[in-house]
Length: 548
Ligand code: F6P
Image (cartoon, rainbow, N blue to C red; front, side, top):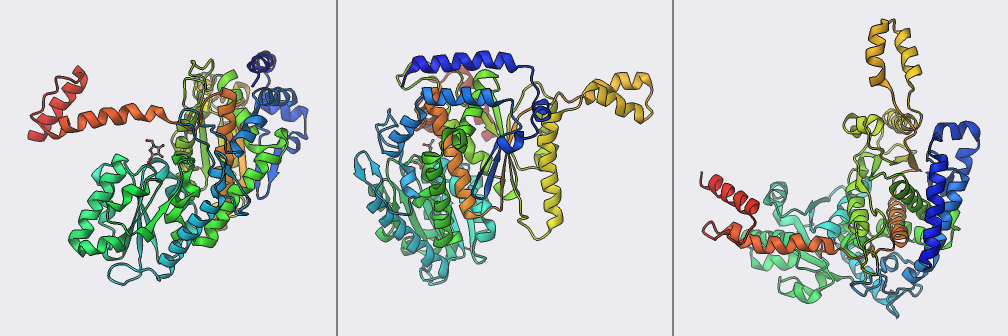
């Protein structure tokens, strides 16, 4: 990649930002009635509206120059060719192979992975179907009614988010549960709702060493062995991992073990056997539709010209705000209750991938990388943090997501939901000037003093940017498409920032220190001498509480 060209593109954008610094989005619509027509892309059942952004044709052209200078197209080829783009772990990132339904060869480090991928998918889906239709039963010979997924991070967030999003497609006779936290309250509270004899436990862990998952799985195993007998473990448990050797020791039958590969990052693993709980819930056919959604976006990402390429545009707008306007956060607001876990899913995807401070060569990055991602479903968050979004000092670009068709039976609810979603992006963009506020207060017959005191509080600065993703309805395919759009957005941003989006060394230090602290916490007589004074003080205080 020509870093000199990148520097030039960045400089041109910096100058341009100063030029358009005072332009208002609302005025851009007045000047160009065709703005919406030109600034949206239709992609199957998803419409991506990017007209409410601080940008014009020149901005777009300059951002695309940046993408070209950073060699997004070349790096995209390397990604899809299965080159070791995860440079610190010397691995490709070939999660796209998992949603390749055609079986056309796809390579990871020079080997066609599709035969193995198709085999594993067939095996996993056959098991999922058999659990779902009662062919595979519990130790007591009954049909499974409940499925518990033990996993954390990518081994939890994907299936948990998708299972919630696709609730209408989950078989009525099945209840899916997701237990992630090592906090015993998580499994403890779930356990109260479980009919143990008809519960299938899935242990999902890429490494099969993760503290939280292993602790929860061991607790569940002991409970099952005690309540149903040791022999029942083989019938009530199954596992998904890349470390098949480690699973045998747990006592899981070899035909209930599902694998994937080290070229699948945890946060990209929903497409693999990690999606087993989801596949049981929605069935193999719908699971394939979900995969198809991912495949649709791979085709779009690799073939659409950059200026109509949705993940490329999403990435560029993020770079625009992060690096040229200094906006440090980004909100994802689904006006879709069932997408409640989508922001949390994206937090891992974006922040674990691009929360980096060194570039590919290990040198400190020269610009800010991933913003803080947060979000909650609308309309709820309108009554929580939207005050800050409208009037706070921090400008937060927003992604709004909304379905055109109602998901529930009552169309009236959906009309109100829809109106609110549009109203928020409109309010963020338009704002309300002091003149408008004063005119409204006068119309309410307030005194001049009262108007003077109140008016500044009612001003909305406006000019706050947002994208809107409008989809027909939240189907498995649309969900697959939405996830893959964000995945490729993250990849493109990683290319522009010249960082490795596929490792996550930043999670290691805390794990290591927790390992050292665990025996000290467990034994009240152990010295805290080697701890820093704050940690030692906290341990001492906790020990006192535990005695008291
Ligand atoms: O701690 C971070 C992490 O390694 C994530 O990247 C991963 O998704 C999660 O832990 C769970 O890891 P595993 O699937 O190996 O249990």
